[in-house]
Image (cartoon, rainbow, N blue to C red; front, side, top):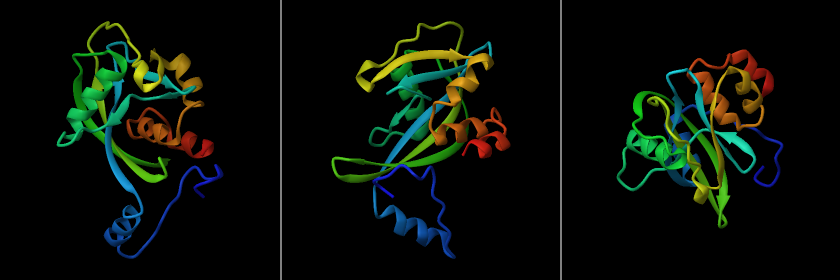
Length: 170
């Protein structure tokens, strides 16, 4: 499963969820991250383009940093938008990847955020972000067709994506 791209997701069942989780997590280096579903006063959503795919701003938490603090910091660093107002926590998503022959499980804590007025958008080149855009309904469908499954989960948790649509595309 690690070496092909046939799987979009994996569901594991067990009688004792805490033991299953503990056993599964031991197979990985676990990294905490946080990000935001940011909207502006016009109701547009802040999206970034990285490596040719649309995404939401997020990144690794610093040691000792609370998820909400990391989310605000990462959104500002990756997009240039400051003065953000933290909203509610939406969900946690998980994804796996390999980095220097080490299996990594990244747990991302997602929050809603509000951005004040107009701010200059500045993509963080050091993180391979090539574009930052406010996305309205006219472009949202197109951008979500070129994103990651866990980003669809964030939109669905916020009530911005019908569950039926998400399931049909999965």
